[in-house]
Image (cartoon, rainbow, N blue to C red; front, side):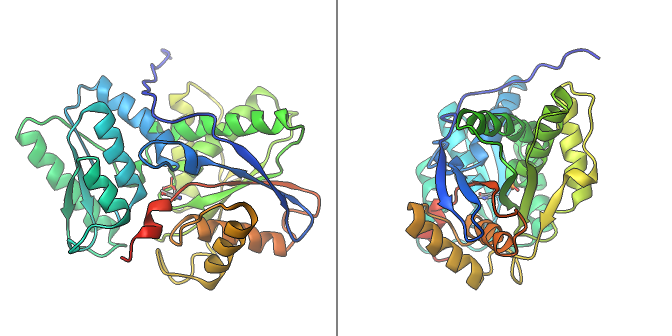
Length: 329
Ligand SMILES: *Cc1c(COP(=O)(O)O)cnc(C)c1O
């Protein structure tokens, strides 16, 4: 098979810090991987995906960007930032009605110069939102604007390459601090972060079958997106293919724990409120209610059940979400 060329633009400030988070209740040690500090338009995990998604867009001669998300989508805000950096007009398809005053991620998206399309659809109507994106993309094609249209969360195999590389970055940082990570825990929603990490794990395992590698544990916070272990496995395998790896992930490599979602996406839970407070007081880490706080409540919950053991090193990837703290809707 011919070597596939992987196109990348530089958006993120890498490596992001890996901070010692001190002891958890079980006695295990917490490490916080600061992907909230990637630096693209106020930061977050989507910067790593957008480096490859936009590399692909430029390669294809795109003249505009289109993407989609919930009203307070971090992915949409960071795509708006990417569009600004590349000088490409950017269209965002958002759930909900146009608010009287833009807040949080929407305010930033407007500041970055994006066009916001308020669909009036419900936050969790992922299918309706994707349908709207398809229609808008077609209109832009018809007008000759050569859109590069990115699915929800940027969770394609190309986007996931960013997290296959992040896996290596984490392993290197752990080695540099003289420990092996036993688990990597993070919030999963559209699945690209998860699939990329699994691809990175499988590639590392193939390179060195004797190396002790961490378990990858995604804390699920949305229903009805890519969230099944089968689809994450498929996406991880597509990513391995793009990386010219012949090794493959199995469903055993994919662990999704949705016990910390509460009743639905973006619905508050007491555990997430408590976890956000714990993180703010422990390390001045700011977690958002929709994503990172629920993910971290999963880490604390699993630790309380002694799932990691009492002497483990547990890495939490802080995936960002800061701007939604400043939004009421
Ligand atoms: C998008 C997002 C996630 C989830 O990442 P996926 O790759 O979509 O699963 C987690 N945390 C934050 C803050 C996000 O914006």
